[in-house]
Image (cartoon, rainbow, N blue to C red):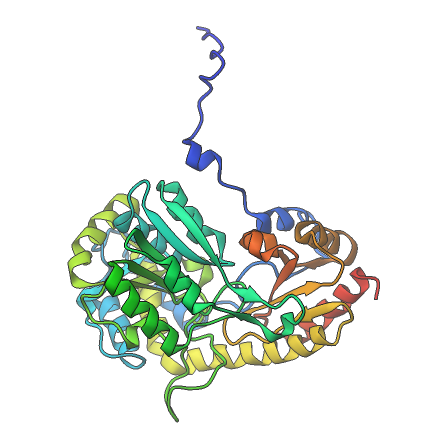
Length: 405
């Protein structure tokens, strides 16, 4: 049986808001290196170190025990309780009943948006920003207003900063959600406690929800909160009340070396928990049980694991940044948090073209700044999470060669 060719305008296609989404510029650069084993890849936001053996063994034991069935939409009670105990060491106590386990931090962010925004709602996002976050709101038909961090064009080595008064003015009663990622991917910028307090008070007055992506909370190199306290960036959880319009998103990916496991969590106001449970049912039903068992094992390793990971990241940062700063034409600021060096090269305005050229001519894989929005154009992102700092040194050698230095 034959079928007629679809008439013009009737070719099957996705919704306009989906069709119009740009593809990942980071993947575009990575795809340019397909089939090559001589490229040093620093484009993705993950360490090259595998998940610790006890975590992998916990997952294997779960599978061997036949734990291949559904779990509660909100996660295993044992994992929710372990997360609550872990967070109690960092912030005022958050009960397990306010925690929802998700299939990765990106799943948590998408579910948060599904719970909070309708088509036409306004979302204010502080940018540059990992593009998935703003795309999620756009997929749901929300209007995204971008509020840019500032970098002095004459002194980019001074880093990125927030115009707090400008952001407060941009948030009005018409703003449904304020979307923040701090410590920030890609810039390393982070909020301080005074800025968080001002934003929280203002959003209480306007009725605006805050969705805070704090997945890099433990990857923080700034001043500590108190002598002997675990290292962590300032968090809205230190200031917020349980009934605030506040959703805080976390992930096992970065601090626990579990990017491929796809396991995260959300801290929610109690009234939002039932709706999030329903949305998780409609999205993924639940995170796999064996992955949740791995999460419990990771939390069981406690501060020793997190401190080891953060210490290695600090060593990597302090290896890479001076080398970049000493490279002619390169301008870079030392990040206060995250696992990225965000830098620009004088005379190179097209970051995608430069990233592709560095792959082709120098065997160096970096992420183009334009992948994080127009605000990042002209910049490159280098993920410095590496087991061996010598890889970073070799990477800088290749960068200099690629720039003809």
